[in-house]
Image (cartoon, rainbow, N blue to C red; front, side, top):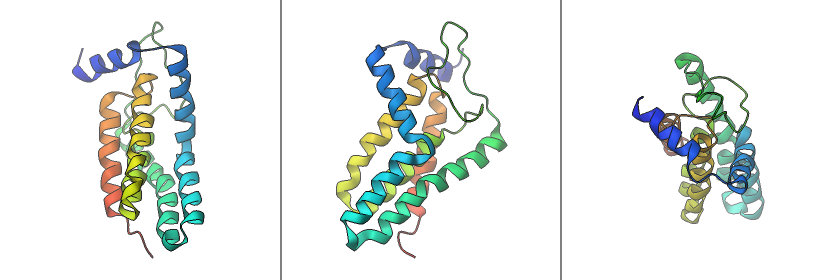
Length: 164
């Protein structure tokens, strides 16, 4: 068994409680289609009109990152983890493809871009990390899926222009 699969098994079996599993499912749903990031950045655009354009770009970045992520998924075609009937995934996904994690890509892209708008927004990395770690915790992704997704997201967040 390779290191990626061993780490996935540890994440899927250790520190599991019904409350924590439910919290991770809720976070995962909030990350679907980058909904939590779109919402947060639209709110920031309303309350911080001086940076409105940049916050709106951050809001759009999440869904764009997911689109790019799906292009990569279609090329790589890595199936989602299968840990057998004793450890089924604890959540659903829109596709059977795993690499890279769209939650990780969009979350780290937006958190990185938000921090470029205002350094206080670095707190967004805590949410990005929680959303991202929830994926292997629920058995939805290999750890390498989230690592590569996070690195891709950071690169996107650094490269995106924050004004038009």
